[in-house]
Image 1 (cartoon, rainbow, N blue to C red):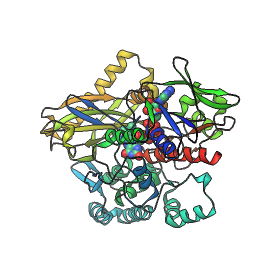
Image 2: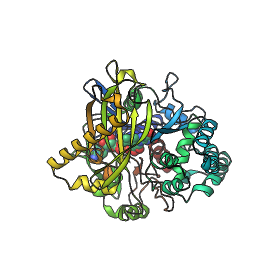
Image 3: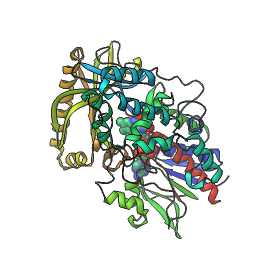
Image 4: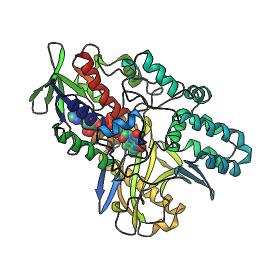
Length: 488
Ligand SMILES: Cc1cc2nc3c(=O)[nH]c(=O)nc-3n(C[C@H](O)[C@H](O)[C@H](O)COP(=O)(O)OP(=O)(O)OC[C@H]3O[C@@H](n4cnc5c(N)ncnc54)[C@H](O)[C@@H]3O)c2cc1C
């Protein structure tokens, strides 16, 4: 046996680290605070319906890339995985008109140009950038800091068109990109899916991922994917302890020697892979002073390194009353805490018939949340919090019915949740379900997965590289094991 690894957190990063650890011959034990594995990549049931919390697109779904190999190795995807059929990223609706970002880029360009001939040049430029961005790949073979000159050369060749995208859009926010269009519908199309301060290139890369068929959603959604990974780990002989939060990283003779559980039990190991939220790690599991400088700066400078969360509500709707997939729609203005909004995003899961009783479907509304929103929710007492959540869900229901009147037929609120839910459930920093936002002019903080001054501790998870998400989480788990092997 190569040695013993304790993994903290059974989200995607922790499960991936544990699986790669087992494959490398280590004895592996995972400690997870929740009663279910998956972290943010999960789903739950309410009154005969299933609510999916995560996957809108799974980067790496297409065979032939190193990232796809990773998803297959961890059991998230297999030979028998069926993907949800789909031909669009999302649709925006404003004033009786609609515009769609189709996977077929020629179709998108044609339709958007017909909708707004005055924006033809800008549309062409944007769609061309999306075409070029299809070459973008998340490094999944090994981490950047373990790559040699040949690896960099190969990556440069594969991603040869990305510098052109970055030159054109690297310094532009989505809000600024929207200003280049004259048609308000097109402005809404580029500016409302992600926050306006988000880097335009991140949106372009996301669309390119979908357009190249590399961002499909596996059937069964987030919870099923996570459970496949957990089953794969158990099949390989790894152990997951659920409802077992760790209290501290155990340090002995200057290195991480294991973890300390809530009841004080010490679990010894040769290595610890920490795959839970980084603010928790430096907020008491180890000393704050050990935080790498880039992160310390980001946590202190809240305006330059914002995070993103969501205020969400899931409804049971009449099947066919809300369009399938994601639709953004303009609505009568409303306010929740500090946020004024006049547009909502709804995702209808009618393509998963098992997730609702016959004739019904689940439709989920998500209103993006920022640091300021989190601060507001946090300031409320228990009663105000509950009342504000209920009020927000009632507004969502009203706006949904204004836009899709047939949805009124038996409309039922299944659940509503806020940034504080993510904080409670996963310990997510300010409820963030990604890493620090990708900002156009700020250098994103990233981490090499180790902590100077604390050997034996390896880090994984969505915070390792902005803007986070599933591919960063899964590869960071693999990379943690590669780093351990390298250290030996
Ligand atoms: C609404 C929504 C939509 C999303 N859509 C997408 C998408 O379409 N595509 C995409 O790529 N990404 C998406 N994401 C992001 C993605 O879900 C996350 O980036 C990813 O799941 C994070 O994984 P992780 O393992 O890094 O962290 P987490 O999922 O946070 O896992 C950390 C785990 O550590 C556990 N933990 C915390 N404290 C302790 C402790 N003291 N002891 C033991 N365990 C502990 C937590 O309970 C948790 O299970 C979405 C997220 C949300 C919420």
